[in-house]
Image (cartoon, rainbow over all chains, first blue to last red):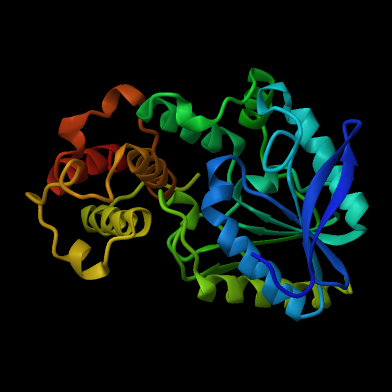
Length: 215
Length: 92
């Protein structure tokens, strides 16, 4: 996952430096990652979307939330509030003009006044899925989040705002500003990518950001 | 949350779409399934991790809640058994 304009940068939250992946230079977009296993399953999709946006003149940031990725903290010591603060800190560090959130990332994107969301999920639905995955696979699916993290996520909903654009898959019956054809990659046991979906997302984000006068 | 379904064919189509999307099965394979087509234990794509994703996706698309105690090997055994379960949930 290298290429032109790729850099690993730090942002500070909770008294520590955490990592963020940055692709491209230009008006900054903060990618708020999906949570737990859904991030692994959509990482290729996110990277492809970030690359397409970098080519369109944006700087895209994807932070590691505390306790995930290259973070020096253990997930079991992290609370929901830590993740909320980290998203806000990353938004400030990136000097972002808007957020781009997929799935559970939409539960953490409200530091951004302008929010673009794809298939936002309620915290309760993600908590059910996590519990179910833990029941199905002995050992809890590899994640050991704290009760404080789970309880906070369980109660969280994507925050409403005046500048929020929501896209969903065509197969999703919930309301959206636009629906795109594509697979729910966050459900696939084997991580996959969809370049068509990444291109469609990047194109909509770019158009939306310019229409809103964000850049 | 979405409204409950009122059409048996729509539940059938939703279940096929979920099998295709979650398991990554080819459209032709899913379209050819009938009630006796075996699922859990018969498809390499349909392992225990995939069960969790499949149930959650069915919940979201059909606007239903599936309790843990309702999930067992019989319910997941064939396309027909899963369809019967989904219809009972979605059309109640």
